[in-house]
Amino acid sequence: MNRSRLIATTIFLLFTAVAQGAESAWKAGAAKVAITPEEPMWMAGYASRTQPADGKLTELWAKALVLEDHTGNRGLVLTLDLVGIDRTLSLAICGALKEHYGLQREQIVICTSHTHSGPVVGHNLAPLHYLLFAESQQQAVDRWVATFQQQVVAMVGDAIGKLAPSELTWGSGTATFAVNRRENPSAAVPQLRSEGKLQGPSDHDVPVLAVHDADENLTAVLFGYACHATTLSGYQWSGDYPGYAQIELENKHPGCVALFFAGCGADQNPLPRRTVTLAQHYGQRLATAVDSVLMTSLMHPVAGPLQTKYAEIDLALDTLPTREEIELNSKSENRYEVARAQMLLEQIDGGVPLSQTYPYPVSAWSIGNDLQLVTLGGEVVVDYAIRLKSELAGTRTWVAGYANDVMAYVPSRRVLAEGGYEGGGAMVYYGLPTVWSPEIESDIINEVHRQIDVESRSGTDYLQIDQPK
Image 1 (tube, rainbow, N blue to C red):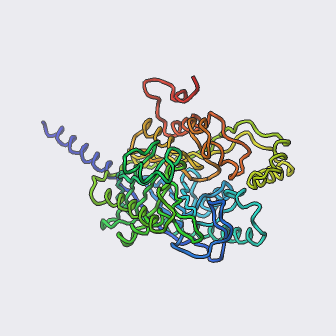
Image 2 (cartoon, rainbow, N blue to C red):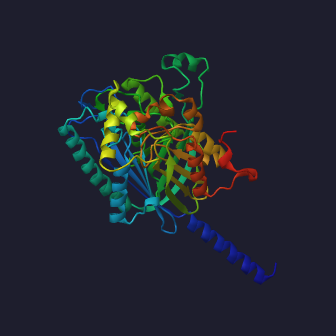
């Protein structure tokens, strides 16, 4: 090799190394704030409750992780120990974050843990509480929501202020306590598990994103799992098993902020359940799964840009009820049918007709060159995660449900056809006027593919995979 070619090769290698180093240069900042109500408030998630909360097992937390790539593009992951948030609150939070910090909608994902031991949040699950609430109780909810929103906005500012050079790595672990509740009777689960006879699909992956600072200290860990946070059903505030998992990780790694996102666990339960000991046990098992990835697995470096996308699609509902049908439902012996009917009649009488579609939120991020973070609104069944992982990048595709707006259960085409609680029965508790259209799955999957810009395999049209023959 002559001298000029040697110099050229050396310059090229140096340039490549510098470019690769720049693409690996991340900044990250994390923060958290306790959001546990300080006054007695009604709890969310169960229709059977008859009084406000009367104690506390754990704090409820809002947490923020801000990521910034080498180009300065930022993404914010908010995690909340709440059963869900509605569209109105989601828009308000995102609007405030844009006003204060310049964050655009596509740069924000809001993930809720779906704990059933947190407070009523705005109008989420409104028919559950519509006929129970006295005016004073609604005022307490409104005061808490206003305070909570201010806390979240300030906390994000704290996380942005902590942005510092960081190394991002990722891995995937396993936890097996989630059980498909549609396929396995609760009382039979211990025996079925011991015999290896549990039925139905589940997603036992535990995705892990680790953030280390320049001194190699773990400053944040984002992780997820696809399972309802319904171990507990009492009257004490609690983050349920996700809360205990976060506590365990933060105790093991002082100075670390542990953030949980719920996967597509709408048809998955932690079984058996109903005791604090079990909630702690499942939390410890999930934390151990995360720690096993952090401590004993090969963690993959995250290199490349951060790309954030977000859209709201017009997700179709099935045939809308007539006014006469709604009025008939208002005389039902089911108080939740009555509550939904009264709410729908108030809407119509207020000049707002029923809509044939719902503005459904879908977000797909590329974190570096390898990771895909998909966030879907509502209580999403596990079929979505299984399908998206198979069509995209396997364990490098992370699918969160309960994100940005929890407006209803979101069944797959299979579950919608089968019916049952997740297939349509639960719609009454969210206040939507009817069940989803059969095109729900293809519409959502289509939007995820559009955002990630993945071409269909083998030249086939992926939109037709779940269409009727």
